Image (cartoon, rainbow, N blue to C red; front, side):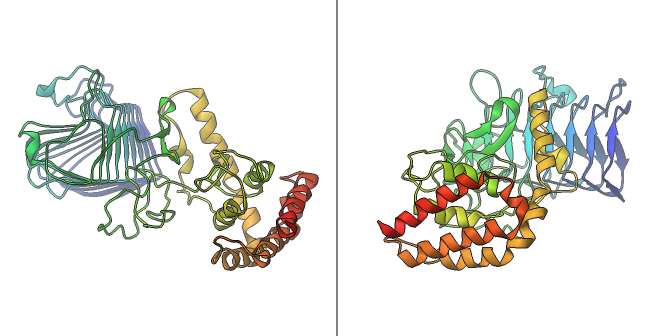
Length: 417
């Protein structure tokens, strides 16, 4: 059975309830379900079933966001699971458990009533038949615990950010078996970890703005290029639909957490690198500005131009329901951000076609740039910029022609100096 591209809300029991089934749920918004006093009221409830949940927003449900039990096999991928009253994900007596590339946050209301399945956690695993595999998830700001293990098999956690859960001292991971059996590697945790694993980091993950639930990574985050170097990510994507490892550094490693860091050259964060970003770059030419410089020396120069060229026309792939996935969970300001992202994304299609050849020139020109930069390489970059500028009059509307010409003149001075 397939449930696709639906809005399921304000059901008196669970939003979706099924037993003894094979069900795939994709691209749905499942919220505000379970108003009636009944034991299984959650966003999704299943028992003795194979469940796959992809690219959904599951929020503000009366008990759990997702509740699976009775030998079910859940696969939970690329979802935002937030503000559910009990747990984000509650898995009881299940096997074949895969939870990957999710944001799981702000779950639990602080009541903590385990006898009723209320562990106030991002992920609660109870009596697991086989170890749960949790990879590349961001689990944060949940009321009591990031991951709670209520007996059963301990989980395997890889490339996860588990931070700022609980009140007072943070509760990253807790197991009633004792933490010694939990495996966690290449994770960003807040407290020390006494379980099994390696190469964990204990630091601020540097979210873009956790106050409005924007858990993308800032350029300074130590989670970037810090994931498991031996993992096979196949065709996996992050929370935005961006390929894993697509914009990694020289080591080409996945990032830790649900977000794969996007190019810094997307200065206005509209999910595309275009002349809007180029105008900001040009305005700071030869100046010191850590927010614009793309390498490590904070000076905006020819080496930053190389990196900017390499990111030209990058844009984040978008799910059909990207507006929902970009939506923040609270505040009008967050909603405004979501609308801006959706409205500006189509610009990628209007500028990409006319400059395909120019992009190929830029790739060839920047491939061999290193110190010292030759006059010939600078001229190739100038030619590339002018080819882009002249290719489409609509592009010229994004930047004042005088500002553009001034920047080109400054580049030509590089040859004369």
